[in-house]
Amino acid sequence: MNKQHQLVFEDIVRRWLRSLGIKTHRQFIARELQTHPDYPTLASLTDLLDRGGMRYCATESERASIMDFNYPLLAHVNQGGNDYLVQVDKPAAFESDEKLRNNWSGIVVFAEEKAQWEVPENTKLLQRQHAFTAMGIIAGLLVLAAVGSAFNFSLGLASLTWGILALAGLTFGIFTITTELGMQIGIVNEVCNSIGGRAGCKAVLRSKLAKVYGSITVADLALSYFLAQFVFFVAAAWYPALMAMLMVIAMPLILVAGASLIIQKFRLKRWCALCLVIVGVLCLQSVLAFAFFSDAFSLLQPLTIGYFFMVQGLFCLALQPVKAYLKDSTEKDNHAQDLLQWKRDPLLFIAQWERMQQVNTATMPHELHFGNPDAALELVVACNPFCGPCQYAHAVLDEICETYKDQLSVKVRFLSMEDRAENITEAVTAIFQCARGLQSQEEVAHMLSDWFRYMNLDKWRKRWQYNTSLDVKDQLVAHRRWMNEVGLKGTPTFYINGRRMPKRYVLKDLMHLVPILAASEIALQPQDNL
Image (cartoon, rainbow, N blue to C red; front, side, top):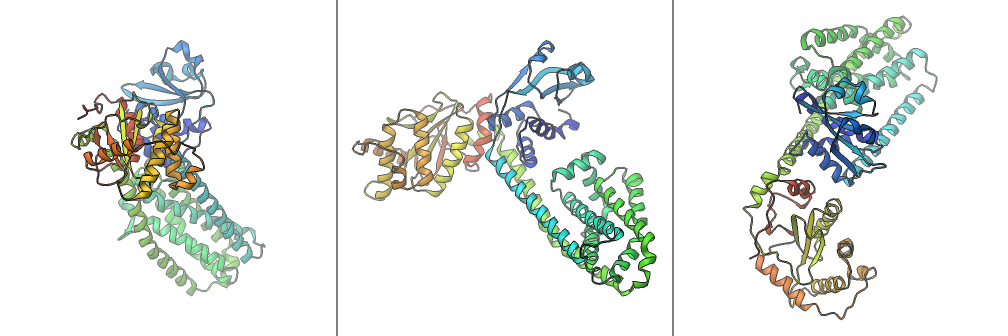
């Protein structure tokens, strides 16, 4: 797809999911799509939908079938060699929209009736986002309560307006800092994109003209100015001279606002929506200052102007280490995303996998097996029943199998030690005895999940009844012999199609690799068992 539409691919997908009543976390969707090796194509979208368990249809159809689709849907458009997706809300759009009428390729993606999409990580991020939002609302209410208390809830119209403008300036000052640092905030992105294009705000705030001195930028001055102003505004309830001082400082800043407009229009030739809001605040405060200053002139104490700039300077300097920390964190997140993009490339995985140790993973008698036995991908897990990392690995394994149960075959093999570590041998014996009496692979998977949930034999026995007289020594010996043959050094260890999983990968990486590897023309071919 062309560059213009690559930029908004994840936004189109997220808006479509939102239209279906599915809540998603912006950064999660962007990361999952952008790190897919086939981004931005339909393959990256369908893999995302598969991961969330959505029932959908991705098909190439004729125009005569548009009434049979579920809406809203995503339609693939090929316009002058440029490929992109368009959300279609009603069948009539295929005729009323010129792009769809002339350039629709016939490919559509639509969800089945009452389709659901759920990924635990997305849910956790949404919960965290809601918690931060609630904290922000509470903090805002506390600030408003403090201001109201300071003025005994008897603000005049001019003072009330000034306070609201100061708070607005402070809020958008924070947004300028986060945007300059590349931090993603949904509503801020929407505002910036609507006026200055995808890179408008960031490009302006990171331009050379936005640099003031050293690491100090215009965004730093804006935030420190409105932060100092808000502090002095609250203090003005007890010292009215401070309000007069704020008005004096605000008067000439209408010139700064004008200079900002000129620079954006003629030098940078692009608009920063956040800057425009701050320009508006400066202009309104300047107008208020000229209109009401005569009433406060007699209270003015020139020395307070120096105090203001001293406080602003301290705030500005204090911002620098905070910005450095946030910048470092953002860069680490970006590097991590770049690493994910490499790790999710199936060709890189296969190249490393081919150099790994080849082992015999032939099916044993009474194998602990679940998933699809005919799947192209086989995962053998070597584990210890009392291993903490194994407990985490099995939680991840449950999520992978739940998502891709038809594309993966799983075998679980346990460490057991002869004449030592009796608790391990006792636990493995109980697991083997229990598995012998189970009727389906789903029960085996559930039983193993319960074991690694508790890792306590007494608690586990309360949920699973089994014949304790069954002789499973042959199975214990077989697992022990296999562990020795493959030279197992630690648990958990994973083997994919007869070879150890590459060292640079962890089990969670398979969450994204399973569907790509299963569909890849260069598949992981199972090796002949030795």
